[in-house]
Amino acid sequence: MALARPSMPLPLCSPRCSHRCHTLLTPVWRKIFDARNTTARASTHASCQSVTPSQAVSSAYVHIPFCRRRCFYCDFPIAIAPPASRDDAVTAYVSLLVREIEATAKAHGGKSNSKDLQTVYFGGGTPSLAPVNELRRVMCALDDAFGVSEQCEVNLELDPGTALADAGALATLTTPMRDGGVGVTRFSVGVQTLDDALLVACGRAHDTEEAHEALRLLREVRDERHGALRYSVDVMTGLPHQVVDHVDSTLDAVLSYEPDHISLYDLQVEERTKFGRMYTPGVSPLPSDAEAATMLTHASRKLANAGFERYEVSSYSRGGREARSMHNEVYWSGAPYHAFGVGAASYLHRRRFTRPRGIASYDRFVQALEKRADQPENGTDDDHDDHDDNDNVPWELLKSLPDNNCGDESPEVIAELALETVMLRLRTSDGLDVHAYSESFGRPAARSVLRALIPHARTGHVAMLRRPNLIVRLTDPEGWLLANDIISDVFLKLDEDHI
Image (tube, rainbow, N blue to C red; front, side, top):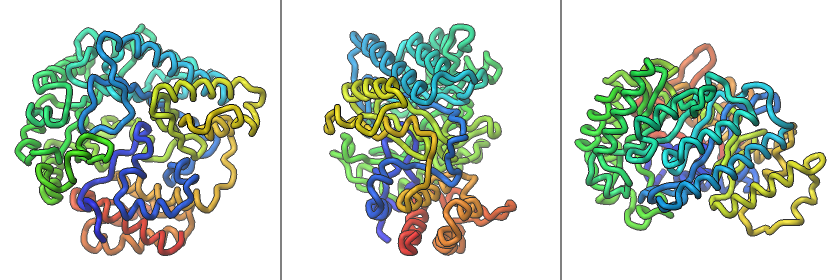
């Protein structure tokens, strides 16, 4: 089979990704997905742990879209706000976020008296451009609407060189909410590389000096908190003109700051980005497939030698399970989660809904959601009559949010869930529980998965373990380097067997 980049790992799956699980699929995967029911594809996203109405929603993603500039590889929904007007723009946007949070809580039966939220993730964009008081305003809204546990993992993406990468701001950010702070317990630092020429080539807004300063400050704050604070560092491979030595020197420097977690991402060249217009994957100055695979393999082994466990295709942690990102594990396990903000995708009642990517259309969406939440019995099927079909608002969300009964799924939806379960679970070191998969989707589907994986098990790229259920997972690093190939084979087999 001819894949675009067969040795590359799977794209990141998160609520800010706007269906990246579909849009970044290799041609073989996309062909299979496009053969499925379009409505089912657009609205579902799950794993073998089926979401039921009784499951508490314990996680929330919040998208802060503002950036100083757009990186050349970025296709996330962002907004470039000049420094002079940025604070006003953030304040207006946070007001929209708060309104969406309040309307969502109302649509789901009113404010919670419990402390349901166990994880909150501020992503972007660049959340560390937002003033501390605005981030606190969001956290207070979440607490009022759903209840934020005192043990909640609150993760904030932080870019070096931004206002919040400062000792005073970090102190307020990490102060518990009950004491007037934001309650951040974990930072994700967008370092990407510690080579200035590569940072310029990627269009990043920071330099290596600012990256070192941010890492130094985070280590100091963590030490002062006696390990109560954790931080992760993002590192990229496969960049233009990048070689193994660049990756090696970046990781050496990053490891000297003793982070708890490292996320290692291979560059994905998106069509709508500047890189998409400039470069072709696998063609110089981008590394060839073999060179990119070598970088990833070298980096993975280096991190393993430093005591890091690879628990997901792009994620490495050190210090036990508590060092892992609890929030990201919610996505991979198929648990439900809220999401708020421009382009954010929530997963509730076995449905994934993506909000509009533009702030103006998001504003209209929030207004419609408020109207829907205020109507008796949450409105009727006639609500569609008073809006413009071309305003990019996901109106189906308004009809489904108050619904607490999943009902019987269509065959198309079940087939979609079966495919996405494989994709999500094989991303992780925990792997796919074949018995649970069989219970969810039937023995024929489980047999098809096994038939597709057995050839890869014979070559040492898939491990089959009994614990006591049969667990299948990709081997590290060989299996994960071929993740696209292996999962594509499973997709093809499920399709051939009409599962």
